[in-house]
Image (cartoon, rainbow, N blue to C red):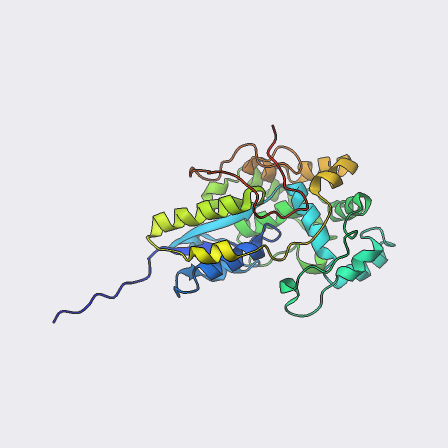
Length: 303
């Protein structure tokens, strides 16, 4: 008996490995919206910040991941902490040296706090001295930076728990297995763990490029109307990376030292700048532009 053939979902699923403070919430929501009408197309597990990108989880999926310049990462992470209730007690513990007084107005409460719009006063998270003190405290007694430690746990070590998370940022990296982390990250190759990388400095162009590559690889068709309609979410307002670094060059140098191997693997050679080269994949990089930005000033590639 003849039966009408029922189309099946592509064998190759789409996966986004949620990387904290690398436009993770934004990209997660975009890929969820682009695949909402096609159940089973999106690999849901890797949307978690906590689950690592293991070989088993990569199997049968086209994996997208994201990255940003380490100095910009630390600026965003510092500002993001002011939205958390524990920032109040931490600031008191360090005699108000971590954040400005008005940053107390940034705190959000409740299980859906990350979906709330920013509520910080314009002057909050603008003091380079406070940023520098916070960065120094996160680095005290450690030989690896928070960003490196997080990427190592999630992309190399296969850990399903972020050590540097929530209210632990001020001392989490002190117990990192520094020699192992440094050895592994010196050999780290982005292309070996993900099929396509989104750099936040060229966020929208890279994300579109990666999604187009997924369509070509899988035969799937995504809902591009959802891509065009989406706006950035979970971005913590703060002074530009360039302004913070200009006032705290020693802090910036230390970040690039402690996160140096990671930075080099993605082509970052200076603070706040876009990557000067990429070893992530061999696709067409396309035109880089700044419809979406995660800072108060777009970051331009070096001349």
